[in-house]
Length: 181
Length: 373
Image (cartoon, rainbow over all chains, first blue to last red; front, side):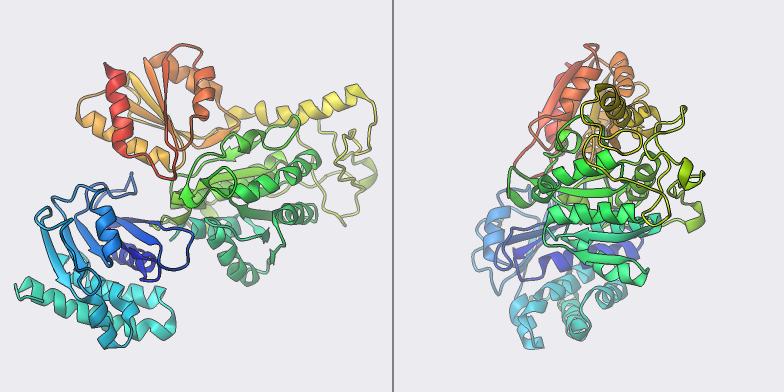
């Protein structure tokens, strides 16, 4: 599950993740929930990745939750059973973890927006998080993620997005080594 | 591929070469992709001023000999009802996609619903019959769009693809088979010279007449006033009017066995059936699988063709099971048809869902457990 507000690229990153999963020989179904607003409304992508054909296309018990803002952390922590969930949280925009602290499998706090800003654009926090996710889970080849980005992202932003994935991969590797991010 | 995109690719393979529409969430991606793809295949894309004009434009294109389509959501589909009647009485083959969102009115702009399922049957005034197909996946958006064009041509009637927000936006794998394996129905043109052609008089063994295009040299009146077999206004001629209305109705309803598509899962040993359609059928399948793990003998009937409603299918299922559960993303609509068609042989239970969200599988599972007791 991916959540944030409109403008953070939640829909695009859900689409990219599902496409990269298909390239990695999984079945995948991505669905989206957003409001009529162009910016700042609550946005969610649900991506089901499976070895088998997917019936119900929505998330029931999230294995992973990439959460990019405080509001969606507060909202969706009440709606889903999270005791088995690994959270990748954007600590640049989430300061209060009370709704999930101690109630989930684990939380990784990643200053994704700050990191993205250092790369030149805060909007690529989404792809940075996908880089972390792909590295930490090992389910999808990072090459497939990059290939998908080249297919789906506007040409002028491809390089920036790939840089974000690389930075995400570095962060993911330190998480795997147990280094504090 | 996204459901909306799969629909566009399906329509192009079916031979659609004219699209007129007005963008509306959650059908906007259809117009967007059509605007790019149509010029590439030598077709025409027109952004219209509204949905009233959109449907009339595709009827015109259809009469000019093209396979034509429009796509909208509930508010736009409401506006199209008058034009829809015009397509029915002039027997213009067209395909309309209604990607359902929550209503009434502007309603839940970005959220799914199955609230238009009765409108798809009865939305325009007067007596007529409709063909309506309900896709459940991006793959269905591709397959059923081709099927819809085929049915529209075969029966000279509008066909509605009744999708919903989930299926329109779902991004999942779509297999496109080799083109020579796809059945495409082309329009049947008159095989008699213009002076012998009677535009609305079918052969005695058929319900549908061949259709020339404007400019083919045949005299054709596309008349919305009740007309006779020649297309002439009939004034007060009860018998001719009755013949016309019954033919428009029976050409669909008498062919229900040929038109009806459905899928049965786990039904053979079942004493409970879930009857569902569209995106809800996927939730229902999940619930059926969960129930089977608990040892409950329950199966699924997925209605692919919603209209004409296939009474015989439901009647047969009802004679086999003790209960039929009908989950729908509305206050309970097709459940009435199921109840009627099951003729009291099984208990029929509605599981409505409104508010712009799919059922949770547990909503259906708990009803299955209740029905088993």
